[in-house]
Length: 205
Image 1 (spheres, rainbow, N blue to C red):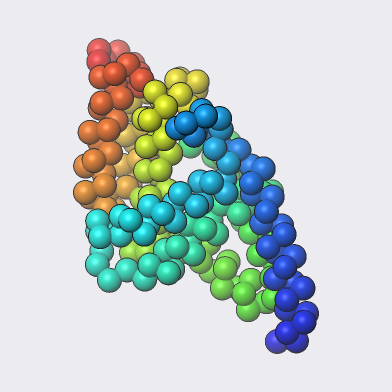
Image 2: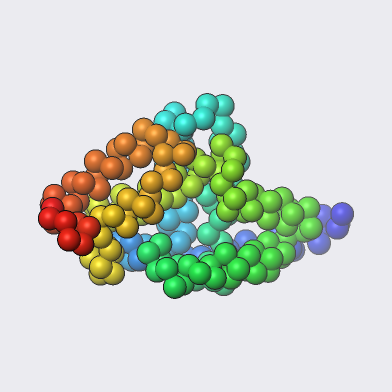
């Protein structure tokens, strides 16, 4: 193990690098100024969702600290890889490869023990096999959908996203919280009814 002074230098370097997440902008808009949300804001909002909505998780007895670590760490890779829009199938083809390389570099700034721990947390989130990762993934998909519904479907309309694609993308929410997915389905349908989300092609709203 490195000495405390060396560890601190590495840890501060990682923290400084993480500040760059504030400059990575997403497709979703904020509800008030209607500007694009940045990744750091998204990560903070996810942490709040986890704390507030934990009682609705599909699995009881979750390790909430681990869930919080997942939602605060998983988007750091976008400092290098950029934000990949959820409905951009071309960009998603190599998304994991790009983000894995970024994880190697960014977490590698930390002392080896922390680097290994953070990378394991990131890998767990990506695999979505544990109760904690399923709930973390659920709030990660719910949050941008909520913002889209609150901004008249701005990002959906800008990219020509339709109801069926939103449902397909977000249905995995149910694995982390069936109750949250039930709420989301009603929210999505309300967006269609309001004309903020286009129905499936060939199907009238």
